[in-house]
Length: 198
Image 1 (cartoon, rainbow, N blue to C red):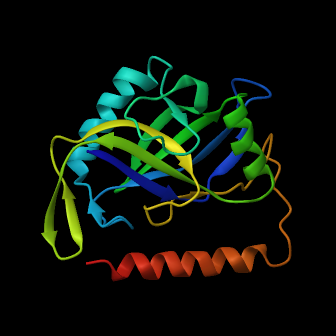
Image 2 (cartoon, one colour; image 1 turned 90 degrees about the horizontal axis):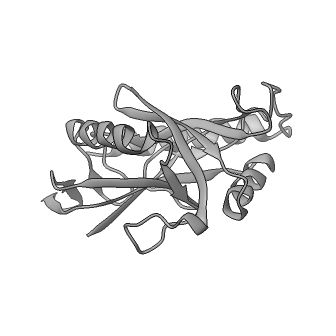
Protein backbone atom coordinates (compact mmCIF):
# COMPACT_ATOMS: atom_id res chain seq x y z
CA UNK A 1 0.00 0.00 0.00
CA UNK A 2 1.28 3.49 -0.88
CA UNK A 3 1.53 5.66 2.26
CA UNK A 4 1.81 9.42 1.95
CA UNK A 5 2.23 11.73 4.96
CA UNK A 6 2.27 15.49 4.61
CA UNK A 7 4.12 17.80 6.98
CA UNK A 8 3.59 21.54 7.23
CA UNK A 9 6.35 23.73 8.61
CA UNK A 10 7.82 27.21 8.35
CA UNK A 11 11.18 26.69 6.66
CA UNK A 12 14.04 29.02 6.05
CA UNK A 13 14.33 29.83 2.32
CA UNK A 14 17.89 30.82 1.58
CA UNK A 15 20.64 30.80 -1.00
CA UNK A 16 22.90 27.77 -0.74
CA UNK A 17 26.23 28.54 0.94
CA UNK A 18 28.07 26.07 -1.31
CA UNK A 19 26.22 26.79 -4.59
CA UNK A 20 25.65 30.51 -5.29
CA UNK A 21 22.32 31.15 -7.01
CA UNK A 22 20.81 27.85 -5.83
CA UNK A 23 17.91 28.13 -3.37
CA UNK A 24 17.22 25.72 -0.52
CA UNK A 25 14.75 25.36 2.34
CA UNK A 26 15.29 24.11 5.87
CA UNK A 27 12.41 22.87 8.00
CA UNK A 28 10.36 20.07 9.53
CA UNK A 29 10.07 16.98 7.30
CA UNK A 30 8.13 14.53 9.49
CA UNK A 31 7.23 13.73 13.12
CA UNK A 32 7.50 10.41 14.96
CA UNK A 33 5.24 9.10 17.75
CA UNK A 34 2.37 11.50 16.93
CA UNK A 35 -0.87 10.90 15.08
CA UNK A 36 -1.00 12.87 11.83
CA UNK A 37 -4.05 14.11 9.94
CA UNK A 38 -4.31 10.76 8.15
CA UNK A 39 -4.71 9.09 11.56
CA UNK A 40 -1.35 7.31 11.22
CA UNK A 41 1.40 7.00 13.82
CA UNK A 42 5.02 6.15 12.98
CA UNK A 43 7.21 4.69 15.74
CA UNK A 44 10.45 6.59 16.09
CA UNK A 45 12.63 3.48 15.73
CA UNK A 46 10.86 2.67 12.45
CA UNK A 47 11.42 6.17 11.06
CA UNK A 48 15.02 6.18 12.32
CA UNK A 49 15.65 2.92 10.47
CA UNK A 50 14.16 4.19 7.22
CA UNK A 51 15.73 7.64 7.44
CA UNK A 52 19.14 6.02 8.06
CA UNK A 53 18.68 3.78 5.02
CA UNK A 54 17.48 6.74 2.93
CA UNK A 55 20.53 8.80 3.90
CA UNK A 56 22.92 5.97 3.02
CA UNK A 57 21.24 4.98 -0.26
CA UNK A 58 20.13 8.37 -1.59
CA UNK A 59 21.23 11.50 0.31
CA UNK A 60 24.94 10.55 0.44
CA UNK A 61 24.86 9.59 -3.24
CA UNK A 62 23.17 12.85 -4.24
CA UNK A 63 20.00 11.41 -5.78
CA UNK A 64 17.42 11.94 -3.00
CA UNK A 65 14.92 13.45 -5.45
CA UNK A 66 11.29 14.34 -4.80
CA UNK A 67 8.39 15.60 -6.88
CA UNK A 68 5.85 18.41 -6.81
CA UNK A 69 2.55 16.73 -5.78
CA UNK A 70 2.22 13.05 -4.95
CA UNK A 71 2.00 10.66 -7.90
CA UNK A 72 0.19 7.34 -7.58
CA UNK A 73 3.47 5.47 -7.86
CA UNK A 74 6.24 4.42 -5.48
CA UNK A 75 8.79 5.45 -8.13
CA UNK A 76 10.22 8.98 -8.35
CA UNK A 77 9.88 10.33 -11.91
CA UNK A 78 12.84 12.57 -12.76
CA UNK A 79 10.75 14.49 -15.32
CA UNK A 80 8.68 15.82 -12.38
CA UNK A 81 11.54 16.33 -9.89
CA UNK A 82 11.39 19.62 -8.00
CA UNK A 83 14.05 19.17 -5.33
CA UNK A 84 16.75 16.99 -3.80
CA UNK A 85 17.15 16.33 -0.06
CA UNK A 86 20.68 17.31 1.01
CA UNK A 87 20.62 16.67 4.77
CA UNK A 88 18.37 15.09 7.45
CA UNK A 89 18.68 15.22 11.24
CA UNK A 90 16.57 14.58 14.35
CA UNK A 91 15.45 17.17 16.88
CA UNK A 92 13.62 15.05 19.47
CA UNK A 93 10.77 13.35 17.58
CA UNK A 94 10.91 15.92 14.76
CA UNK A 95 12.81 15.02 11.61
CA UNK A 96 14.39 18.15 10.15
CA UNK A 97 15.83 18.55 6.66
CA UNK A 98 17.70 20.77 4.23
CA UNK A 99 16.24 20.58 0.72
CA UNK A 100 17.75 22.06 -2.46
CA UNK A 101 15.23 23.41 -4.98
CA UNK A 102 16.04 22.42 -8.56
CA UNK A 103 15.95 24.71 -11.58
CA UNK A 104 13.31 22.50 -13.20
CA UNK A 105 9.72 23.47 -14.12
CA UNK A 106 8.42 21.87 -10.89
CA UNK A 107 11.27 23.27 -8.79
CA UNK A 108 10.65 26.76 -10.12
CA UNK A 109 6.97 26.51 -9.16
CA UNK A 110 7.99 25.69 -5.57
CA UNK A 111 10.45 28.62 -5.54
CA UNK A 112 7.85 31.09 -6.79
CA UNK A 113 5.29 29.92 -4.22
CA UNK A 114 7.81 30.41 -1.41
CA UNK A 115 9.20 33.69 -2.75
CA UNK A 116 5.63 35.00 -2.87
CA UNK A 117 5.44 34.48 0.89
CA UNK A 118 3.10 31.48 0.72
CA UNK A 119 3.31 28.17 2.56
CA UNK A 120 3.72 24.71 1.06
CA UNK A 121 3.56 21.25 2.58
CA UNK A 122 6.17 18.53 2.45
CA UNK A 123 5.02 14.93 2.46
CA UNK A 124 6.74 11.58 2.78
CA UNK A 125 5.96 8.82 0.30
CA UNK A 126 6.49 5.17 1.12
CA UNK A 127 5.06 1.68 0.94
CA UNK A 128 3.89 -0.59 3.72
CA UNK A 129 0.94 -1.70 5.81
CA UNK A 130 -0.96 -0.29 8.77
CA UNK A 131 -2.79 -1.81 11.73
CA UNK A 132 -5.72 -0.18 13.50
CA UNK A 133 -4.92 0.39 17.18
CA UNK A 134 -8.16 2.18 18.14
CA UNK A 135 -11.15 3.75 16.44
CA UNK A 136 -9.28 6.56 14.72
CA UNK A 137 -5.59 5.58 14.88
CA UNK A 138 -3.52 3.43 12.52
CA UNK A 139 -0.05 2.17 13.46
CA UNK A 140 2.40 2.01 10.55
CA UNK A 141 3.95 -1.46 10.56
CA UNK A 142 7.57 -2.63 10.29
CA UNK A 143 7.28 -3.39 6.55
CA UNK A 144 7.21 0.37 5.86
CA UNK A 145 9.77 1.50 3.26
CA UNK A 146 10.46 5.20 2.73
CA UNK A 147 10.57 6.29 -0.93
CA UNK A 148 11.02 10.09 -0.81
CA UNK A 149 9.52 13.43 0.24
CA UNK A 150 7.32 15.46 -2.14
CA UNK A 151 6.09 19.06 -2.00
CA UNK A 152 2.28 19.22 -1.72
CA UNK A 153 -0.50 21.68 -0.91
CA UNK A 154 -2.30 19.86 1.93
CA UNK A 155 -0.14 18.36 4.71
CA UNK A 156 -1.01 15.57 7.16
CA UNK A 157 1.79 16.11 9.70
CA UNK A 158 0.90 18.90 12.11
CA UNK A 159 3.21 21.90 11.76
CA UNK A 160 4.81 20.74 8.51
CA UNK A 161 4.08 23.68 6.21
CA UNK A 162 7.12 25.25 4.60
CA UNK A 163 7.00 29.03 4.32
CA UNK A 164 9.81 31.50 3.60
CA UNK A 165 11.55 33.38 6.41
CA UNK A 166 14.55 34.68 4.50
CA UNK A 167 15.22 34.90 0.79
CA UNK A 168 18.90 35.06 -0.03
CA UNK A 169 22.16 35.64 1.82
CA UNK A 170 20.22 35.78 5.10
CA UNK A 171 18.13 38.82 4.17
CA UNK A 172 14.90 38.79 6.19
CA UNK A 173 11.72 39.03 4.14
CA UNK A 174 9.53 42.03 4.89
CA UNK A 175 6.21 40.84 6.28
CA UNK A 176 2.92 42.59 5.79
CA UNK A 177 1.44 44.13 8.94
CA UNK A 178 -0.72 41.04 9.61
CA UNK A 179 2.01 38.48 8.87
CA UNK A 180 3.18 37.98 12.48
CA UNK A 181 -0.41 37.82 13.77
CA UNK A 182 -1.21 35.11 11.22
CA UNK A 183 1.92 33.18 12.28
CA UNK A 184 0.91 33.32 15.95
CA UNK A 185 -2.64 32.16 15.19
CA UNK A 186 -1.33 29.28 13.02
CA UNK A 187 1.11 28.22 15.77
CA UNK A 188 -1.65 28.27 18.42
CA UNK A 189 -4.02 26.24 16.23
CA UNK A 190 -1.33 23.67 15.35
CA UNK A 191 -0.19 23.37 18.98
CA UNK A 192 -3.77 23.00 20.26
CA UNK A 193 -4.66 20.43 17.59
CA UNK A 194 -1.44 18.51 18.27
CA UNK A 195 -2.06 18.41 22.06
CA UNK A 196 -5.60 17.08 21.58
CA UNK A 197 -4.34 13.98 19.77
CA UNK A 198 -4.56 10.76 21.92
